[in-house]
Image (cartoon, rainbow, N blue to C red; front, side):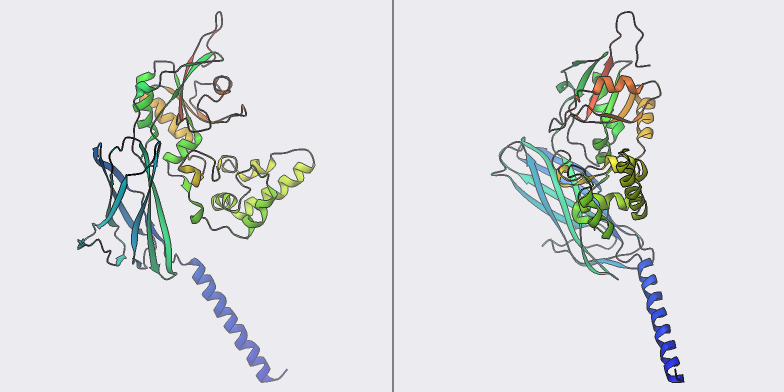
Length: 396
């Protein structure tokens, strides 16, 4: 090989190294890392023929140094009702509230640069009609584009706001269970706007007495923690697209988005190892090893259609820090508490519980799934231990 050939090889090597360095640098960049918070929402007008929802949200630039722009934003509203929506109209307005913002009377959104400080905005959703009492939920989709180093990317922030609130007195149907009576507690549709302790104080405490135990479903708790994702926000990778076919069709991991949600939580390497070891163990007659190795979230993820509307359109993850929630309820209300996963197949899983409650007692009380798996909207169950004659209570 001549000198020119060696020089050419060296130049190609240098170019390849430069391209590799550029690729590594690109992958480490945050790109259009822009967040729109779910915000705080209030029903500022709650009249028979007019509702006005006002939300206070913020754009947050998570890139630290880079500038990310919002050239467009608009709002779409889907109402859920127990009756026809004929005659009910909605209108929306996005109002910039950041420094030096000048809201326009025509509603036009002027392109905005989000820098280090958050950029607050206000969203108004107005509903009008002859009778709005049948409305239950407003599903608000805030569409916007993030414009920056990665180009012009479409984004959506989903916000779900309840429009009706039952009274604690609506829950009066106690039912017998093994060594206990149980009361399914009807609530409004729980959303990210709710706090588990506040829900217990509002709906459960008025029906409770000392010694009672309150249980909250794991999915409603995850929803209150904001742990749900729309499939359009999930980008299935190579592993998810190929492995999902190998799960049972009834599994929440049998779709590319469902499995990718788990991968995003625990990593593709852990999922691959868990699958390989689990497959070998299953051949040897030991099922369930995959879920043991992949982690708790592998069992708790609910894919699309796994819960009540409008969350049936979302992938709902398992809750975070359930023991912390249980401890707070016990500390603030004096009621023992548990976070549970119960279904109609008589399967009861206890994610967390107060130290004075036994798993065996909870399983006996909840085995018939008093909360239901359909649209009962009773995510909380109050358990009242019944002391059997001649026997000590098994709740403690």
